[in-house]
Amino acid sequence: MKKKLVVCIIISLFLISYIPSGYALINNQSIDQMERGQYKLVDKNTFSKQNLEHGLMRPDGNTLKEWKEDYFKAEKAYINPKLANNIIATSSYSILDLLNYVPSERNQGWCGNCWAWPATSVVEIALNVQEGIYERLSVQYINSCGSQVGVGCCDGGNLDIFCRFYRKTDITIPWSNTNADWQDNRAQCDTSCDSISTTPYYPISSIYARTIETHEISEEQAISNIKNILHQQKGVYFSFILPDDEYLTHFNDFWSDQKEEDVYNIDWACGKEYIEDEGAGHAVLCVGYNDEEGIENDYWIMLNSWGITSDRSTGLFRMNMHMDYDCTIVYQNHDYYSFDFETLNVTFTSDDGAPNPPEIQGPSSVKKDESNTYQITTIDVQNDEVFYKIDWDDGTVDGWIGPYLSGETIEVNHSWAKKDTYVIHVKAKDINEDESLWSTFEVSLSKRKDMDFTWIQWLFQRINILFPFIVK
Image (cartoon, rainbow, N blue to C red; front, side):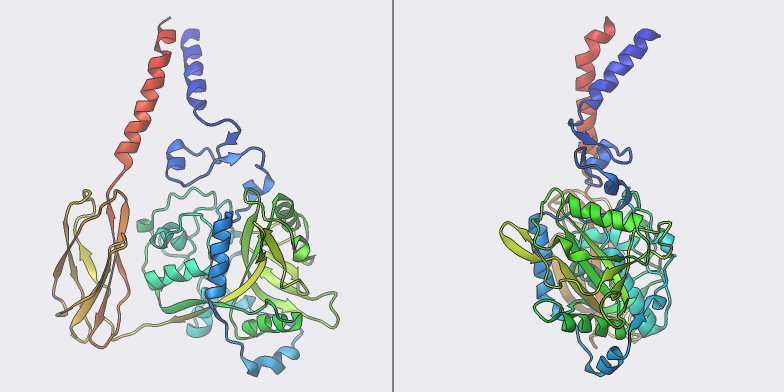
C-alpha cells in the first residue's frame, strides 16, 4: 500500500512539474482550458487582491494605441443647444432611474469585460427612452458570442467592438432569456454562444459610437458637453487608464474601503508611464452629477460593474468633476489621453415590411477543404422577391445574390481552408430594400482530437520514463 502511495505521489509531482515555475492556476483551471485561451497563467509576483476580486482590461501597448485610434475616428456626439439654459439651472441630475439593474448582480467578477457593462447599459437606457421598454439586457450574449467580431470571452474591448458586434447581430436580448443571464463572473467561459436563446429579442436598426468632446477645450466646456448628453437622457460611457500596479491598487482600495459618498480624485496618475505588465483599463457608466455652488462638492455619479460592498449598496461611486480632462499617460515616448467620454447613437426598429430572418440548413460538422451545400429560404410578408447576403466567417462574403422568389429554397456551396469553428451569417432583403435580421448557423472543423492525442501522448511518455522506478 505504501509503495503504491509513493508511486502516485511521484507521478503527481512529475506531472505538476509541467507547469512553469513562478506561475499559479486560477480557479483550478485545467490545462485544456488554458490551451483554449480561456484563462491565463498569472505571475505570482503580481498576483494580488485585485486579481481575485475585480476584473480589469489588460491591454498591451499596441491594443491601447488601437483603442485610442478608434476613439478619435468616431464622430462627435451631438450637443443640443436648446438644453443650455436647463443645464445652467440644474445643480443635481441623474438618469439612474431609467436603468433596470440589480446592484449585487451587476458584477463582472474576475472577467475582464468591464467595457461591455456600461455599453450595454447605454443601450438599456436608449431602449427605455425610445421604446418605453424597461428591461435588463444580456451582457453574457456578447461575452459568449463576441468571437463573431474577433473578441474572446472575458477579453478587453471598447465601444467600437461593441457596436460592430451589434451591427452584425442586429438584435439585443433580455437578461431573462435562457442562458442569457450573467454566468462568467469566475471567468469560466463555459457558456457557448449556441446555448443562449435569442428569443425574444429587440431589433437594432443602427448603432454607432460617438465621442463626447472633452479634450483640448476648457474644463467648463468639457463639463457642459457631458451634462448635455445626460440631459438628452443618454448614458455616458467613461473609460480610463491605470498606468501601473500602484494606481490600480489605489483605485481598488478606494472602491473596496471607502464609502459611496466619498469622492475619488482620478487624475493623480497623470503623466505616469504605462507599464504593460501592470497597467490596466476600466470602463464605467456616468449616470449623473452634483454641481452645487463652489467646487468642493462637485462630482460625477458613476455606476461600476463590481457588484456591491458594505458601504456601496447601489454599486455607485463619485468622481471629482474638476478633473484634468487632458490628462495623459506615457507609452514608448508617446502621450495618450487617460480619460475618454463617449455615448452611443442607437435606434431600434420593427419593420413589418421586411423579410423574415432566413432559415439555414446543412451540415454542422465538416471537413477541411471539402465543398458543402447549404439550403437557405425566407418568407417576405409582402411576397416580394428577395436577395441574400452570406458571411461565411472566413473573410468570404457573398453580397446580395438574387433575386429569388419568396419561399424559394436556394442552395449555396462553400468550403473552409482552416480547422476552426465558424458561424455563418445570412440576411435577406426585398426589392424595396427592407432588410431582415441576421440568422446564424455554426459549423465546426474540430481541432480537439489532435489536441487530445498530443496530451495523451505526452502523458504516456512520462509514465514510460517512470516505469522502471514503479517496477522496483
